[in-house]
Image (cartoon, rainbow, N blue to C red; front, side):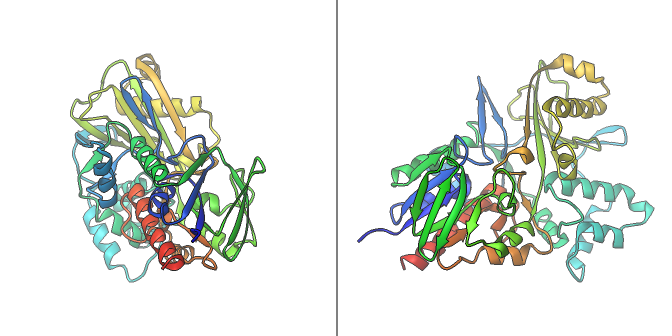
Amino acid sequence: MKKESILIIGGGATGLMAANLLAGQMEVTVLEAKAETGGRINSLIKEDKTIETGAEFIHGKLPLTFNLLAKAGIKTVPVKGKMYHFREGQFVNDNKMAAGWDKLLDDIKEAPEDMTLATFLETYYSAQVHGALRKEVAGYAEGFDLADITKASIKSLYAEWNAEDGENFRIPSGYGSLTQYMEQQAIQLGAKIMTGKIVRQIDWQPNDVSVYTAEGEEFKASQLLVTIPVSVLAKINSPGSINFTPEIDSYRKAAGQIGYGSVIKVVLEFNHRFWPADAGFIISDELFKTWWTQLPDTSAILTGWLGGPGAENLSDATDEFILYKALQSLAAIFSMSVIQMQDMLTASYIFNWQNDLFALGGYSYDTIASSRAKKLLSTPLDRTLFFAGEALYIGEKNATVEAALQSAATTAKIILSDLIG
């Protein structure tokens, strides 16, 4: 009996996980637009250093992630180092949030209804005495969650912020070693992985899908799994957009109702370490608010992180300008000049994720409308079109890669139970 066939659009963590779970039971073909798989996971190996362009940390002992790492024999190391804050010109070693943070979390928990973070702060924390707390809360939402506070759901932020006590880990060989393993395993199970395939058009009807690439190639299957970011799915006329016939207007609208944050990641290598030897993270009020070291590795590398509206404002900036702004932030923190920073700099890497045509940002956050949107996008169309991805995961999403894997596992189970029984 001929196996059912499925095309998977997108070879990131979601697409590769789904391919592993479906291959062997279905004929699986993965079409990835870029020259390599991995999506928003990409590790650059520079001599003896690993530069993570996207995902870098594993936030806790996450089940699917660690299960895959164990199978692949990939080692992890705990993230080390203390938290330093640079507030109002003072550089201090502490792991505390601004005064009033715990009460604010309690107030969010007790809020009678969901609302945006901006509305919550305006309603309950508008007094001048709360100025420092408002600034830190907004900065944290924008930096860590990549969220626009005028859109982000307080109930979702609470669930995430309240579950952040676990140990964090890194993969010394690079996060990309995990996606490479997933790709190899999928191929061994019989999946076809095809890169450099930019999908432009999808014609579909029940149990019959035709996919056309920018080069005019046609791929056919009985089912289709779409794992592209919701930021791309929501667009109609952007360079990375995919046209559907018949159109899927309600699904595109739902994708647009899920928050998706902009982010710029800057990795800077210096000729020596000029920050405290025990520093793991440095948080400031500067434009690039968050910096981290490579501890326990003692490389003279600092990674800067600019998320949310701040990153969006630099969408069209050149890499040279972004580098200057990053060095300007560091110079302010360490009471140096930009020229001094430039003299110490030996290498720089700029990753402006909202300018990636096939990502259009970093990762998702929940708006007030996200719950309904996720429910719709998790509902297959005529047992033929399926959708999955980190943005569609329902639960306390404190890790985007784990969310991508969980979404793939859930959707693969639906596909197999629905089509194969």
